[in-house]
Length: 260
Image (cartoon, rainbow, N blue to C red; front, side, top):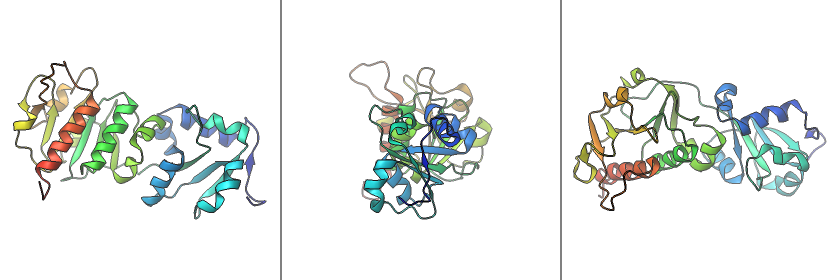
């Protein structure tokens, strides 16, 4: 710590209030154009992908102990009194450090890229898990339709475990925005369509994953080149959408892997 490094000691500090809104409200990232990354793992994942934080925030005692382990470049550094740092966390055991990073600039879907389309998903844990699967299985673009939970909300970020920084993420899209995607779209279904294990899966493609309760909307189903369902010999009515996403994306990846 240097004499120039500010230390926030008041609960009413304006910057602290802004940060609390990012922590508490998943949609705040969209409004502010920046996101809050909590903890060593997420912050290092961002740095490894070349993401430069606008702001690095440490509990004062944490920075005193860990300053030599961080290379923050031109990032602004702010310290928070230890007693106040817990207000920047939704975790039972606060991580004691975090970054504020700028969100990617809004854009349009990149044509010809293997993609995942999120159609109104609401559960942040599901969305974060799907982003991890997308990154693992070579789907480099995730397109969230209007009504989907905020991709850069704190709970989605935690569940994504750093996958955000290896993906092209677009939010607030309408069905018309998919017109130029240039890859066949496959809609997931619990009860209709071709069995996944028998399907000739195109590559690249786009998997459409629907709302946890309502499934894929009629508007997006109309854009799909095909519907696919997963065999469930155990007899459950349906699979969790993140589980279904993992199975479908893995099937696409292994079907077209060079050594498959």
